[in-house]
Image (cartoon, rainbow, N blue to C red; front, top):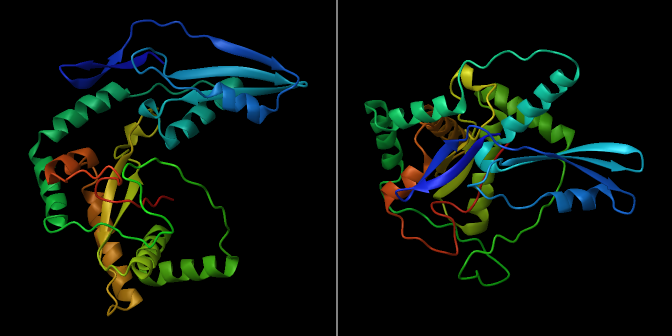
Length: 284
């Protein structure tokens, strides 16, 4: 709640303020739907002004709604689960266990790790993964790619049939793989079929909570790992899945190396119409 961010010597630093004013807004509406109220409730944050977390209670036709909005710089998906569980526990009169460490402790540990010999070996792994020409995914499109990425998009929801789900789980058992690895291999093959390319890079977020003491902490721990695989036509599916599995396991072992550091080290020529290193993300 007391965290803000500011620029010092051209670098963004975290500031934990001694005290802040925090208000819970009360919204009472009769004409608006909850969806309209949520849309109006969500608004930009000023990173230099705490809190980067806002709360409101909305009453609509006798129903009460608790609205919570947090900036992604201070939270991730797991943080929202933690917040929900802890709020429910407190609401039911339970006492929370004290935290062994705070996010600032993690930040200090990570900064020390970045300068360690251990991190040099992790950096070497990632640099070796991208030590040759880095492919750019060229998908067939209806329209010309804009010169500057506009981030406009859409969402398509669909369900996978139970029979297919069971077959995926069967493959996972037979090959000692995870469902994530199987779906990632399938996405690689799909992108290869559409693009005609056999060198594919897909980004994937990873939780980043590598120590048990970090599991109950609210904060932004997520890192992005760039998964590079080669879905060449002469390989059988099982051969390719084995490669995806091995590459994923090695990536997990080296997940502490930060994605932004990798991009800087690779000296990638920035193309404003694309993301650096990859244009497709996969998450579960």
